[in-house]
Length: 348
Image (cartoon, rainbow, N blue to C red; front, top):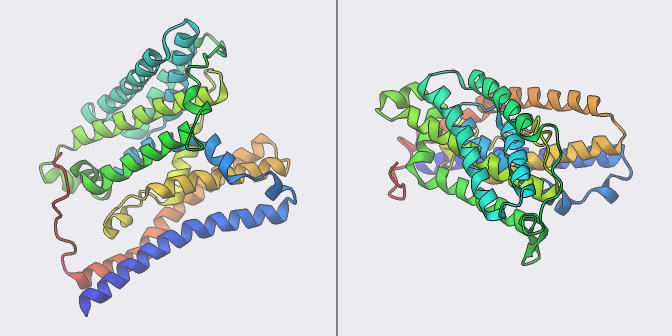
């Protein structure tokens, strides 16, 4: 009886999480449909998903860092740096495959620097990534010299301009990234350790887990996804400039917090990571942006609104955790020690 009640409590917690994100999306759609008569005529779910595949990919990378309880404010200018590097190399006639490989290695270098500052030197992630944000911005403008690289070869733009089974290639790439992230968090020791560190880093450290190494790996993964996002972005728009990616980290951070995809309380449901919620978070924010543009709100008002949404997402995250905690804690107290340690985890 107690076991059954415990599972019911946990299931109710999952349902609350899922109803929240779908309800929020529905509320946003309803609001802009009422405020702007042309909203439904212009709004296209398929186009919004396709236009924001690079945002989803960047957000997946950020979620690895944020699941561990850290933050990365340099993600936007990592995209800027990789964009202009790829643009300059493509403009110089370098083969697209080599450009892609060099761009991904450049992204890993950015992650290595962030990881070194935080994991080895012990700087707080927000301080370290604020510093590297400025560094990456300087490198980006040094590479571009303020130029716009628009002579991208057609062989490079196949990343986004071709379709497989009627679906754009970059959507497939984003889907694979989501599945990889979900697999890591659900079936590997790395994912379990990241979630555990996000809940209590001190306790994990006292358990003789190499927290510094995991932190380094998280920043490397985040930067790899940022580099991939940069390649998708310039392939989609057909140009590379130092303005690419600037400020995108705020959009991504907001999407992660708004969606609750890496909410520490979610780890008690068994997965602790909901990749599809990242997509919903990006979708909600892009829907809000589309609605504001249709209503004729200028860019500055949009900044104010997005800032307010970010503040609300921070507050909501804490409020939601406190309220849903009762469901999960009550459920697991009835289940005793909870789930047995499974055998489907690859040792990290």
